[in-house]
Length: 96
Image (cartoon, rainbow, N blue to C red):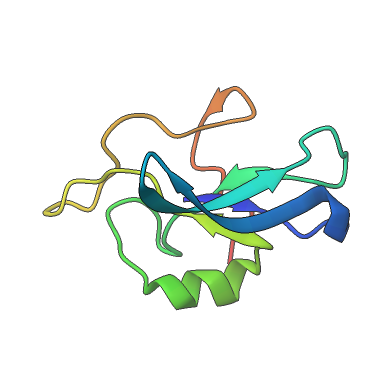
């Protein structure tokens, strides 16, 4: 899940669009704003654990959240690497 942490309102916009006939939710973020942070978050107990989506949102308090990581439905481990700021890792901003 990619998270956009709170910043000035003008740094982020949300709109519903239709692209190639399909409805999409678009989040546009000004990555040049130093107050904008885009990172990843995982379940509170880490990879291999689960956490209800709203619990994660209430714990991390992002301005926007975008799910997109694929995971194994049996082990709950991510399929592929999670890279944050060019470094492999979990990127969970909230350690507790």
